[in-house]
Image (cartoon, rainbow, N blue to C red; front, side):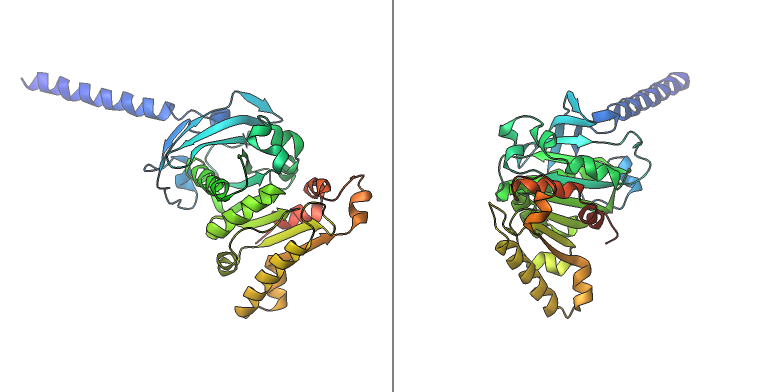
Length: 302
């Protein structure tokens, strides 16, 4: 009887060991590093080595893309419980193995990069995701393809960031976001809703549609770059956004030097674009990806 009981206990132990191995092996990934399904009520093994990530209030699963483009896995789909399907392209450095916390960069495209324009068209038309790699080799880059630039798109962006923070070992002090054209409208709403989620925001050839007070309260570094005569937005709305944030910081008794470190308005003259063979200022906003002064600011110390 005792012998039979011992065999039974050993059998249970073996089954538990096998189950643990199956769970471990099931954490398959995009480029071998990303869970294909993830429930936010559990903590990803890799994230335990980063700063604590608060679980989101919904469950996720991911369908991995089957195509690649210049190192990006194309058309991954985050199936979110509350926000539907979120399409995104994802770059994971080959060096990433989960043992070290990496930075995270989110790049939101203009109108021509939205999902209905074609799978992966955003990373084929815009270079922010590629130029960013020059500033931090240890950085995961996500290029979402949303369907618009309204509040729903901002919510989807936040959900995607929360998923990535949960699924990967991310340094939460290095979470950057950039939005070009309509993507800037979306990004400004996202940072307005969840200012504490981000480290710095670059708005390119766009307008501010989000909240200001939360951004000022968090002292989120913001860089606004646009052509003076941008054919779509002009530059007055960018000036207004800058003035609004500046005045909010003044109410906090920040000095001009302190404000200059976290708030920049960069209005480019026509010559900036013509010297770079850009036919117009709005389309020429894509050139900001190749402007070292702008990109160095975004990925600098904040």
